[in-house]
Amino acid sequence: MIASVNGRVAAVSPDGAVVEVGGVGLAVQCTPGTIARLQVGENARLSTSLVVREDSLTLYGFADDDERQLFELLQTANGVGPRLAQAVLAIHPPREVRRAVTMGDLKALMQVPGIGKKGAERLVLELRDRLGAPTGDTALDGPGLPALGGPITPVAPWRDQLVSALLGLGWTGREADNALTALAPVADEQIATDGQVDVAVLLRQALQILGRS
Image (tube, rainbow, N blue to C red; front, side, top):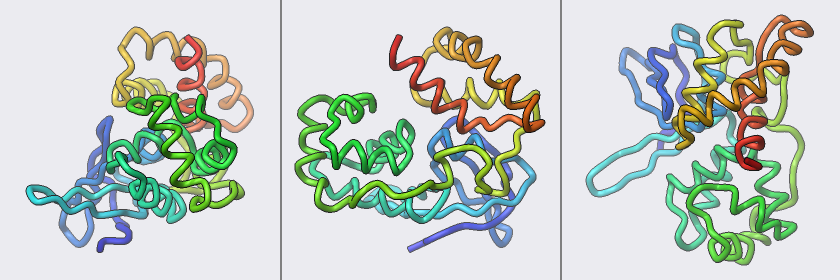
């Protein structure tokens, strides 16, 4: 099993990245929150999980080991494959996933594309005693946490990164633009305070905005 990769980020797309390790470019599928913290040309470390199928080998990448372990544990529930498990982590950070399952918060779980009421009930029933209680902060729970080579995002690219992440999650260009407009003051405040933009934080807020609309 490939437990992690550490190398230069050669390319970034809405659904993943290419990380060069020992002269080999490894394609890694990532959540938008993880992708938002990657910078082409910079070094990054990703915890990874290799999913083996009869006709494919797919490497999934995560901000830390806790997120990877949760990704693998989610797949032990009936009807949950790697793509759905990744979708759960794209919408909610690990701490929120544990809280939703432990507290039986079906509404939160149903925010994930592909999970209806019955699917949410099944997750709670099968995983409530296995996920454990919500833990402390993880690499994607808030600003200022040093993950994947640093959370700093130059001022200009944050708009493109946020739009690409939302499009990769299935939102339309118009919806992404609306979220961008709503979050511009938040980004301006981040720049004024820290001199940088934390795209992962903006992405969480964008998903909340779009989920209410």
